[in-house]
Length: 335
Ligand code: TYM
Image (cartoon, rainbow, N blue to C red; front, side, top):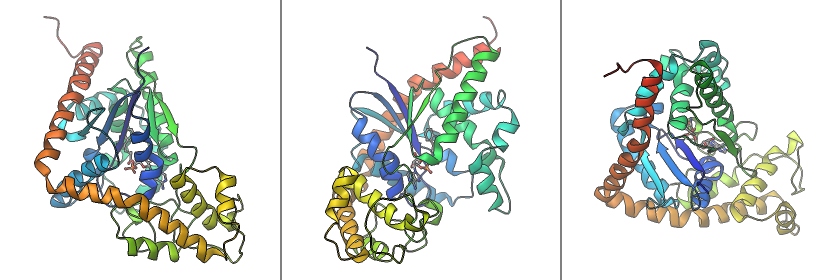
């Protein structure tokens, strides 16, 4: 039987956090074995908001190292940098020309981000088309992402289907979003009504960044917003969103079912105990990842070699796909 094809991506801007890890990266690593995987550091997506070039260069390498440190095995999965494979930008243009503007204007992330910025770049509107190309140029069946990216993957499905319908072909595989059952949406520790996000991660106490020191992790958890009660159990009550988020993180890290998680806290003396215990399991989770990341960043020649090889493998799949797309669209003159 053919292996399922998986594509997913992550932006190198800012601070990769526990939400990114639990909602995406950890699942990529855990499920890579029996699939054909493409994991991409999407630096072109980062340019949709202004970037400092030196910082972007550094963050791109550091994130690639982090993916490997989190257990993504370059012998099993293709790991590469988006801008190293020109098919992504080329495919995006071609897909722009089959995508109605209204589809992009309706995207909730665009509406959200564009209202928070003074000057909105065209790339921000076009972001989901670039993402659709990422996915469908690899004939991906599955796209493992956190809850917040579901709408973008659904748009990728719509774009694939529209291309297929317009050109009367089955050229593009229609991908499926794969959302985690636990920790699909890790919330901010300082405000459990908003998702943990890279753009807020510079605010102390909002996020746990994967490279944070143990002291900083403990600090953020100790200050996590909860409620005035004492009961430590899962709940849909908006009042208990903070406790629910902490329990969700604990559950995702320990891999226990919800009854076992609640049992672990049956004898706890209030939220203080809960916060410290969650901090401890997260610190232990991140310790080996941080150590491995440090080693990889000490040998960037080896890292760059892995990324060059990944780009070569990615090109071998996506460039013929773009070439064929051009032929279907009438851009290649008969020889
Ligand atoms: P990005 O870089 O914002 O996030 C990377 C992954 O982390 C997930 N995530 C979360 N999961 C749980 N809780 C949270 N608080 C949380 N915050 C983020 C995201 O859902 C994502 O899976 N547009 C994408 C990158 C991208 C991509 C792609 C993804 C570009 N091309 C093709 C899949 C396929 C993004 O900005 O993710």
